[in-house]
Image 1 (spheres, rainbow, N blue to C red):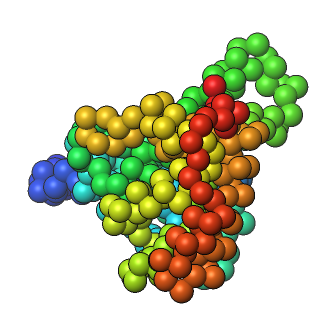
Image 2 (image 1 turned 180 degrees about the vertical axis):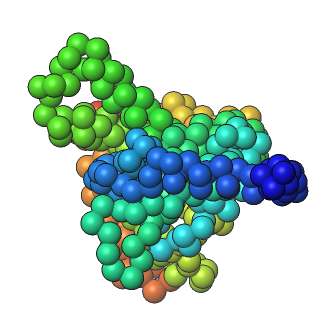
Length: 324
């Protein structure tokens, strides 16, 4: 009779719990059953970013929220919750309930060689990163949903999806053929580096911050290095100072190859059409020369006098600057 009363009391408590709390209890029970210690830890290199990742006793692959944030292209000085705020504000409609649950319930585990003042670590199932990337790319297709600064995350999401998919296919082939037994443990990282070098080249930053910093100074505008927001006229100044003077007919050809869409935006940056052997070196040299004039000038008019004298606008076309 006593056991029956306990059973009914336990059932009543279970029924009074919210769905979220029931999930938490189930998760805690699973951790007790399977263990929540990391057995392996290592770094995955994604371009310039080193992502610390872990494998738990139950085989779960885990990465931290900070690693997710950095892999999406956020700067080091960004708030640690920037990526999560982005997800909550823009991506929830594109995520499955399972992924939302994983985001709401970080995994607490003991890292390899734990110690120090904070031995416990919190992370997320590694699949969450790919789910977020998929959601970002879906959100990017909705007109005006993502801000201009959030389009940066869309670019990084696309790079991650492409690169991981390619390396994943290589890993599957190696497993199917048995080649993974003889493959050097660094081979997949080398393949990932190769793919990323190709993908990231498309989004490489070609215009140094100094270019915009000096432009803002000369125009009397306040410059915020952490913001991508710029007055609309900045684009026109860039065309005038750089592309119209870089090579004869260059701007006209770029406008033809890289036209604006119905929303008034371009699908790529002008510099992405330049060739790597001639176009990009020429752009870099010209940019740094113009930046030098900017630093010498006391005002915008003085800058334009120097640029007009040294780099007058050209007329005819030079084909070598374009990428086929």
